[in-house]
Image 1 (cartoon, one colour):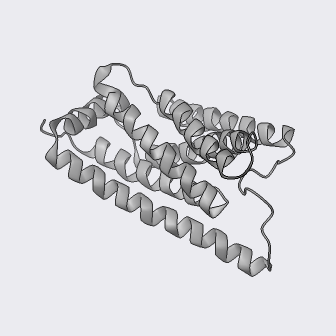
Image 2 (cartoon, rainbow, N blue to C red):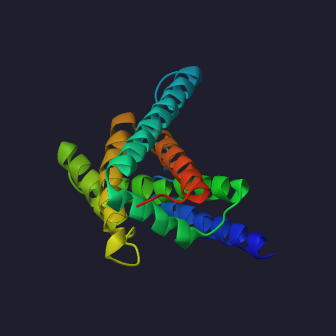
Length: 201
């Protein structure tokens, strides 16, 4: 029962986040927050564009995971952070990891890149709006990734960097499929690694 409650809480929380993002977009006259604008061209061309965004996102996510592993090998503070998350999360099943990775990727990208970034981007014309959207949404994303203690500061800093990267990818590709794929890949593989092993600091 406790494990089912955990899964239900995860789904409920991120479903609420996603619904809030969709409502935010709808109030701005842009209910489909998965794409920045209506795609042009044939249906097959639109599908290929979205598929290429997702594939690029997976590739970028894998590179970020490799970078994380390299930092863990080189720096004690990364190993300490890894262990802190391991103690904080406790035991998670593969189903719970998959659920948490998918729900957080969809919910957070819909909110931060799909709703917030696009709202900020519309406040200023041209490239200035794009910069405001990317930087502003990344800062809010980082502020909401502040952990319980100074030892979690690297997580907040990395969230800022991730927010900038995901925002740039969203603006460049014009959709959320790439950012969602990056977010899901990083969360899935890093959560599996955190739960699986205790690192020597």
